[in-house]
Length: 381
Ligand SMILES: *Cc1c(COP(=O)(O)O)cnc(C)c1O
Image 1: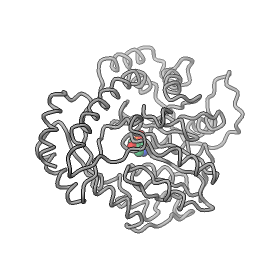
Image 2 (image 1 turned 45 degrees about the vertical axis):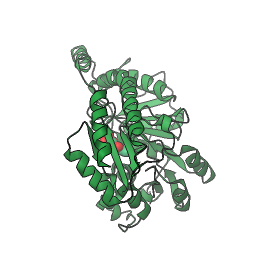
Image 3 (image 1 turned 30 degrees about the horizontal axis):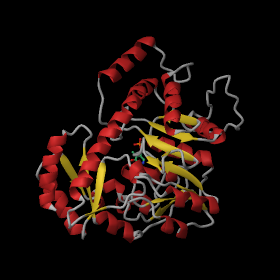
Image 4 (image 1 turned 180 degrees about the vertical axis):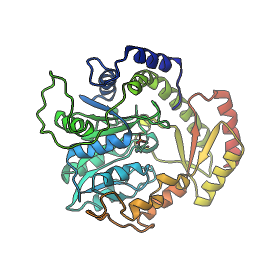
């Protein structure tokens, strides 16, 4: 969450006094947000719900992933990506990331089996995945694509919005994301059929469709991830802030890259589409994990407006720390035992994560402060 203020307070106050707190009322905040968000992402359908994890689960259910199926995902992502797969009794298959820290298409190809059903490319840190290669592979091997765009609202790949390229896209609006309502998520899709399946599943298997929306999909049992109108009212305001946040983030990121690209001991990490990047972190590759950890420590000790992280040390984003995934423990384990993994299952991922230094700048950072901080950082590299 970067920007939050009186406009959000006013939106909640107005909604509370109207007492229109059911999302299926005509003209609800949730449906207003869905129309606006679908427009922004360039898809026909958006379904707002309680979290990004819920959006991933509904996307997987929508494309037909069933217990026992395999779903391929990167070994570097927030652990919820893997848990969404396990929540419906499917098996996460860990795929290496390359130096861009997004899923490696070659390793993805090599890990497809007869049981593979879907792929979750994760646009981690707002960095677009190699979607052309991924779409080609999935088309050839008849796999569905559910994009995890939880950290990538407003990003693009070759000019096309992230979350609109695969069969479905999943977004998160939790506290840590670019726009936020505290907790929330949204599923996007171009397919009316996938939308109906997700809508039925997310809405207690009932799907309170309005009378003018004919449903062609058979109802089936679901969960309840229905969105709160209060949160949707906040999201409507937040969506209006998105372009301002992104342009301030991108301006600062360009400065970081420009000021540090000539430093000999570091090189900017490759990005699959730099124009579409919408993240807050600028990634550089160093000689070794020791060098990346040492730089991280020194930059953070200097207490600058730029902070640093070595992604190998970001706990629940690195597969070696996903104990439940590595040992296949899920609520469904007694019926469907999960796959076991050794901690060295994806060695190249650990190597790339260890040599990466991420520099993080808030979009509201003063540009002169940023210049001064970067001069200090240059001296430390
Ligand atoms: C935040 C996040 C999620 C989960 O979103 P929630 O809204 O917290 O459920 C999933 N995947 C990635 C990559 C995320 O960053």
